[in-house]
Length: 190
View 1 (cartoon, one colour):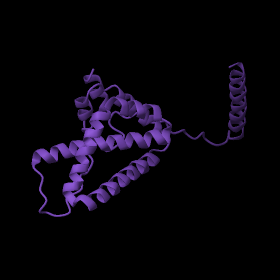
View 2 (cartoon, one colour; view 1 turned 180 degrees about the horizontal axis):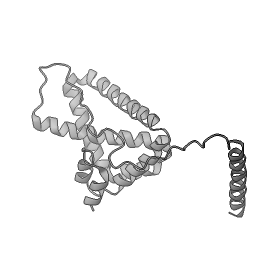
View 3 (cartoon, one colour; view 1 turned 180 degrees about the vertical axis):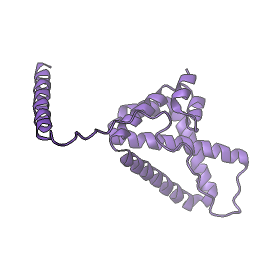
View 4 (cartoon, helix red, strand yellow; view 1 turned 60 degrees about the vertical axis):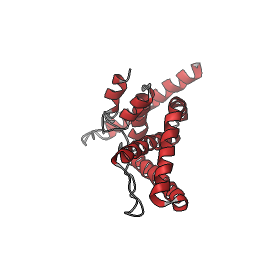
């Protein structure tokens, strides 16, 4: 611990000396403004409504009730995928594991609903392939969105994990994967 403090003190001293040298060298030029770190988001850091792919044939029909359940299942799986991308990108595996421990039965039920949708929407053989492609593209889009956020991505996902882990019930999770801001939902679920 003492070594860490000494290293930090020397690092601050070296940084201060370096900054002073830069300031003196650049006296004739205006000091550039540093970009502010964005605050943690109020809303979700991922798209909350996941687009459900259309069936392969217009003859394949779903009732409005079925479509509502399917949409909810896709949203839950979308959250699971986003949290997995965040966990792997930001070293938040423990947070992801805590999420899965808390909501595994509900996430598994959503996965079964998604499986059933793809089975009906495109058949038993092509349905599995369609689902695998969908999940891969979803994770790729979420990863690309994370890269676009730059350094704020992990900060944003810390806020998202905090909000998710504050939820206590499956219905609170279902509400979370809507367009409502997660911080309000997390407070309402307690």
